[in-house]
Image (cartoon, rainbow, N blue to C red):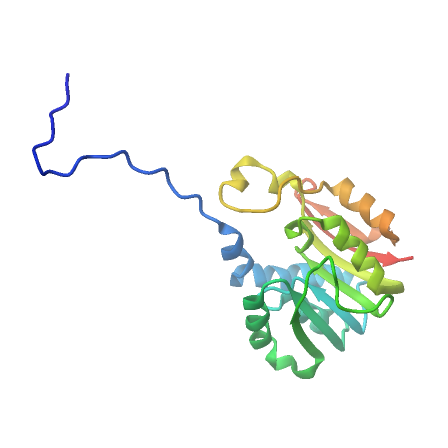
Length: 216
């Protein structure tokens, strides 16, 4: 059957546009639920695994300053430099962390070019930062550079087993070709870290990693 011709002057019907892909990354990263999981679950786990240090660098602090707060409240940090690539996040984190006073300074910086000297840090906190960094291997090298021998990297990460899944990419945007658990551990070892099995946790079938690596 031939469809009727629209009357003169009437609006012509067009196909509906495809649905917009929702980027849930920022919604989740900045959410209260994500903050509470990081503070109460990941922070507590990292403390149990032995993460500790007074002078700390928090890389990728986000709008809520999660890593800096974990460092101060759970990991013994007394001096934290919290970093984020996005200026809006820096400004929001300063407000969120104001109650910690001069123990925390927040500034803008790239994870692949950390603004501190070699061997100056006791602890680097990296909570779900590496999987957002295009050259994540360069960030790992930077983590190793700024830590003193015996210093620690406290990390929490998602791997390609979830990030590269088609369903996940429909609602969340990350750089392509993210790392597997083995690739991350190999990179840490190659950069000068020891990652003993007793200080590494692999959850949800290698999708969620938490651990403490020590700088050789």
